[in-house]
Image (tube, rainbow, N blue to C red; front, side, top):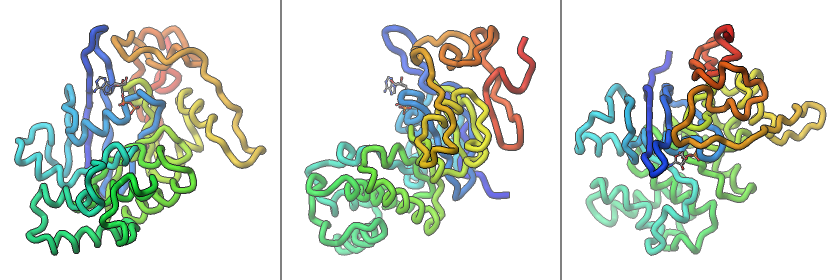
Length: 320
Ligand code: ADP
């Protein structure tokens, strides 16, 4: 049995605004074994990024526990957190807006090492920067280039090099290829996969694109309006999706064969507001199988077969 690297328990993140309380992440729990990838999928605004950011404490969770290598990182003091932060990194969707345009590639990649005292001379820094550039497939000739002089793929390689600079164990990849041309997406995905193998990295891979996540993830968590809807090993989720929302998401993936194409499930209705959400299942107003109980009771998140969890009144108990 592999060791659990990250254990997230009952994570909640609410934002207060003028209209009330926005439930961005509402009781999310999962664990990830070392060296594996959990994909988190769902439509824009369902709480994927907030989950990732809370795990790294880039945002303070409202409540919950985040256990990383046995330590509850929400209970850590500032200097202890600084140490753990070296081991937990993030790759952002849009490398352009996350990179300081006035810094060169060398400065950008060297920055995390500078901030964490990882080199003692400029020579040592240069050697480490060039090594990282090599690891992420950036030619040495770009060492003095600025981000705007590079294409999206190369900019994302800078973002990846920065994430690797402190030799982390865990990386949140937050839509790392969504802003890239399709032709470049596969290169970056392959790079991330190779790095995982060679460096034994553990990933959370956040995306709205289910076709990407299937290729990349061992397990997939489907979220909707801050709630966990379904979680299963990737193959199981694709072969036997249970939640009506997962089924609708999967039916929207373009498939090359016209013979095996599942019928597209078009969801009716609007996404409900995450502010002061009503009781019941958050997906109920759009669900083709909505029952009376779905509008009144939040469905429990239950394991319906080994490693396959779902929060839906169609499963796990008889509807009243
Ligand atoms: P996703 O990554 O799935 O697109 P997010 O985690 O970015 O979703 O957002 C989840 C919800 O939280 C959205 O309704 C979003 O508007 C809200 N939200 C995210 N960050 C903030 C913030 N800093 N302040 C207020 N609301 C936020």
